[in-house]
Image (cartoon, rainbow, N blue to C red):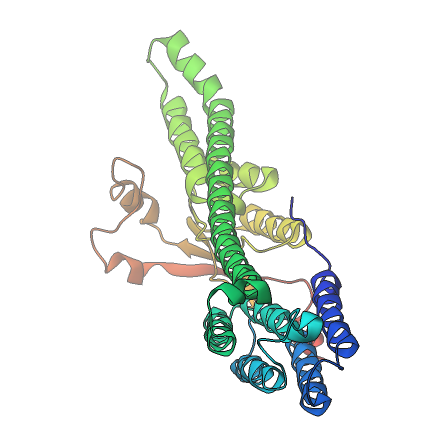
Length: 365
């Protein structure tokens, strides 16, 4: 759960504190020898506070350097100008006339909150040094409220460091959670894919396996050929993937039973197709296999970004079937012992199935 404070809440609180310091300065104007410098300092402090609290367009918490420099300059001017009109040894003290101490502390807390800690510490550091020099003793510094101003800047700095560390840890936890979720999703996908492949393989091969067990391995020539066809169908499930639908599986098996050598290769070119377009591609592919009289069919996907989704090539040759049977390895993968055999094959089918049912020129128009 991510809880966020409204932006106006901290800005409003800082504004109220700053206005309170100005109110204290106004009610104690009779204490300074000359109120004019105090009034000027009040105006500078109000302007610096408004600039420091004004939200920038980028909505970044980090204060621009020039604003930090302005606030630091005001935090230096205020003690020099206001304290010059006060008597550090006045009987009964100066009361609220030393409002500039809390004002500088509040302004530096704002600077520190907006991630300019160096400027904030420089401002309160000057305040401490000036207060010691002006009052003459360390004992009087505590009565002026300097310790409180320094403490609030320290608290602000500590909170910023803690929040930054917590934010960094939160991002790391979120990234770790995302990686764990991705890993779990990948494992579930592998399990589902494995279960689907096992189910599909069992459904395809179970009848023939039962027949082999019943016959004790003594199969007829037709049954041995059917085993080769089933082995090709199982290989299609691995290499064909999204090229396959129930209709395509049926037509591929029918083509193999007619003696056609069918090779399917899905290289991921149609992974981005929507269900409707994929069904259209499957229907066109099943129709092409059904109507083909080629001795060998090579079906593969086209790389993503192409105008076409699937390419179907049909080759016809008198000796193609016998040469292909002699050039298959133990895994059923086809390769040619003689590269010149491909030159003797005749292309009897060349079909490119479009990726989209809408022509590209119609889309551009």
